[in-house]
Image (cartoon, rainbow, N blue to C red):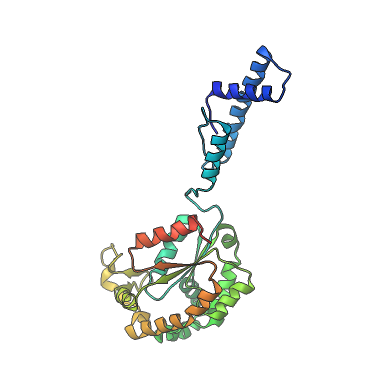
Length: 295
């Protein structure tokens, strides 16, 4: 709370006199001015220690009741900041082609969170255990989920790592089944936000028809929204096997069949996101809920 120096000193004197201070004359002036100087000295340290959290309020020519009312009104307002006060634990779930992984990457970078992607973890596991490649390829070809005996231990191990506990995380596409939900419960992991992406089936099909992968790097491109810019890359891109229309429809049906488990488990922190919007718009909606929790 800021007031001009002379006004502050005058108010200090006024308060001292109101409390029957034995001081008077030059001695009262000196004590009042000294109190103001001490405040100015200490407030600099407060501002340096808590940058971005100090709100300066001009209290000149305002009585105590007016100041109290203004402060009460300010406390009811939620101010936006550049980062959440606590590391969020965010789950992003949605049907195939809803842009969930794209948003997970953006949100994790924006807030400094760990991006936990089941696809990435599985790829890393295949490098350690090549025999898994055939099992996983068969699942993807048929539109089935990767066996929980593979996925669950990978997610459990990753969530227990220190960077997740310190920085918070974005869990991309997990949990999708009741068993996976129960894993998080058994680990006593309670997300701060669960975003459920929604979009029409035809939009999922349309988006995935325009998705291709670079067989050399494994990078996936949306040929509508973010095609490759490097020369020669577009020529070697191929469709993903799991983006075949019949496979996508199978994946959609499986997702829909499990959705009620998700809605029931996370009903107290569930936020629905309309995914058939521009990427930037979806990002802002999610960011706003992270910064200004509604649960």
